[in-house]
Structure formats: structure tokens, C-alpha cells
Length: 403
Figure (tube, rainbow, N blue to C red):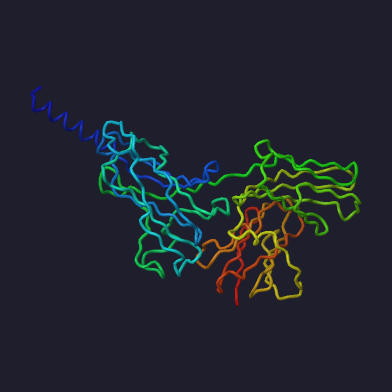
């Protein structure tokens, strides 16, 4: 075989090998780290591989996040790519920096928009990348964290503001990522990861001298002073104490007792236990990790109202949803009646589907009506949706907020 043919074969091999080793598409993800109180920001390789220095080299990128309006945002630490990493001996991470912040734009005043980009000098590169790899780029500190990190989210061009909308002043926060060249590799976002509170292993009852319900705290939380307890039970029973103790028991005290536990990050878990008059106890294994809205007062607030006020009621299958008053000025009441065992969730969204108040209800139905009063005095007047999910069904009610 001639020398020229050898060179042709070598060039073909290099060409196909270089093409095969390119990254074709990537995703972004945010994960809240409860041990550090930081939001770790990740690159996830969706398709392709990169092994050559050329194909591992960082080009332009933009990683944009939305945080609750007025939050303080700091870029605490960068991890990847590494400076001077041609031969895999780089040790100094290339800096990611906050390049632009737009606070509470007129068209979306609930959020601040934050753009983060990498410095491009000196040249930096990743180690070998393969499909499925999850690479930590940098960590953000967002303070305060009041809803378990749920409201810190990646920019989504399908739901969030474009550069030409009111209050954006031409700022383009579209995510992007290029590596090994100028071709766009960003494909989309992976759902964020937020911590699950697991402070209570079970509820234990003791009926020897009345009714006593004791939450069994997991060892890691035994000395935690930041847990808040919210009990709701039969006949309007409420308590913020750790334990339920009722000495003089009457028939009205029997029924389902629900406990909501909240930590100082706003993470929640729900438990419930039913105390029966015949002395038997039925447990409901319904621990659900949820997140409270930005204003914790929006959850669990109950106001006495005149049930004769005008209401909107919708029935779908075995579920009945009622809201009143509507229009609402300072608050509205939400009532949901559905079959026992259904997981009931309720949120308030704006006309564009963005969350305004999250998890105003998040529990397992015991077959009785779930009633809650929701403050709206801090919400801009306008048209909203109350979205209720019960089992596999979703019911949406229009809500008008006035001043």
C-alpha cells in the first residue's frame, strides 16, 4: 500500500474520530444543597462525548436563573472548566461571573432575572466528557431561602420574559452553551432538585390519660431548634406545640389530626393520624414533601367568613371546588371536597401560567371538606387562576383580585 494511501486512511480516521468525540447537546440543572445552603448549578451531557482538547474547550455560554424579587445573589465558587487543562493537569477553575441582573421587571415583578457567564481568558477546558455526565459548574448563594429553594429556577424561554418585554430593557437571558466551537449545544433544562424534609418518622399515640400524640423525631433532627409544628384537628383544633395533649376528652376530639412540620428554609412535610373513639388508631401514610409560598403567612391562615357570600363552584367527578368571594380584595376562601385518599394540591397562577402562590393546599383527603383562607392583599389586581389537582383530575377556577 502506498504511503499516500496510508496518509489518506489516517486523515479519514482522525476526521471520524474527531467528529464522534464532539458534544452534540447539553442540559442545565439547579440543585439546592441543604448542607451548604447553596444552589449548585450543573451541566449535564445529553448527547455526545468530548476527549480531545479542542472539543473539551469552553466557548461562550449563558446560565440564567430567576430568583424571588429582592433576593441577594452571590456567586460563591466556580468548579469547571479548568484553566490550562490541555493535558488534564489544570487545577484552577475558570471563573463564572454574574453579567447582568434585572430586578422585578414590570412584566414579571415577582422575580429578579440573573445572567451568569464564564470568563473566556485564559483558555479553559473540561476533563473528558461522555453522555450522561453531570458536571458542577458553580454554586450560588441566594438569600433568603424561604420556600425550600422552589422559587429559584432556571430561565425558560417558553414561560419567562423575552428581551423586548416590559422592564427587560433589551436584556436577553436565553440560556446557551458552546464547547469546542461556536455551534449551540444547549438543549433545555432538567427539573430542579430541592431537599426533602424528613424530620418525623411517625406519629405515636398514647390514650392512657386522654389523647396524646407524639411526633417521633429522626436522630439528625433531635437537637434542631428550627422546626415549627402546626397541628390541625377535629372541631377546629389548632396548636403550634410539638405534641398534642388533650386531658378532658369529648366525642368532638376524635377524628383526624394533621401535622405540618416546617424548617427554617421553608421546607415542609405532612403527617396525619386518626384517633377513633373505640380506642383504635388508623395511620395514614401520607408524608408529602412540599414547599410553602414566599410569604409563610399565606399558608394555614384561617379567617371567619360569611358562607352566604357569592361563590363560584365547579364539580368534576367526585371533586367539588368552591372559591369565594370572587372578586376578592383582601383574601379568598377555597373549599375542596373530594374522595378519601385523593392527593389534593392547589396553586394560584397568573394569566401566563406563572406560579404566584404555591401549595396553598397539599395533603391527602380524609373525605371531609378542606377549607382554607388565602390572603391576596399583596397581589397586583388582575385575573388569576386557582388550579386544584385532585388525584388525576385538574380543575381551574378564574379568580379576580381587586383593590
